[in-house]
Image (cartoon, rainbow, N blue to C red; front, top):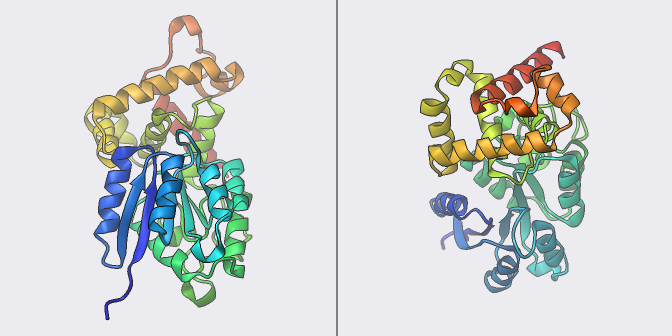
Length: 301
């Protein structure tokens, strides 16, 4: 008798991303995609209709956000309640704490590797709901604003915690110690923090693209000499969009930051050359300066 496959429902208003995730999940021999919804209201309808084992849920969506969907699921009978993995580009302590306290089983920050996501799905269905291990993992995620206990978004899963714990189904946090151990901030966390401080709204596409670009600049500084030929195409390929859209979205994010940000913070990062009449820095100058600042901070720790 064939082994039962884990049924997965995707909920994300980014249709292109949902298509990519759906195709990858469908290719897994132990999983089946039962549907995709692009807003919270449609998600609730599909949850009732398909009764999935796991819901991979975005937070910022039209009509009803991710928290609204989680609250609905928590009102369902326990035996009908799907496990919830929140996948969000908003990587803040408040967001992590909110989704965990609302009832989500796991939190992972975008961007993430597709194989990492399916690994988390496999592990979450092996962990009993409300287990001590899961509770500890969620508490750590809420306390640090990082993703849950099995890894770190774009970071390697083993680097972010490994696969120890009870019966091999729960990981640990940080670089050592128990689930509550606080790790050094990862490059992804530092970039997210810097962009938020600079006034880049996390709900903009340009925020995600800027984060990808800064991380590339930190790892491969030489790419900043080929932003148009290397950086934009690489991000576009990873995000299933076009280089021109990446460039425009980053430009819009930078212009928005210049309107929203504290002038003192802009001066700290870009020097006392910030002048609204002189215009904003180019995309490449913005990315390179943020990357340099974070690298300096990391070396001084």
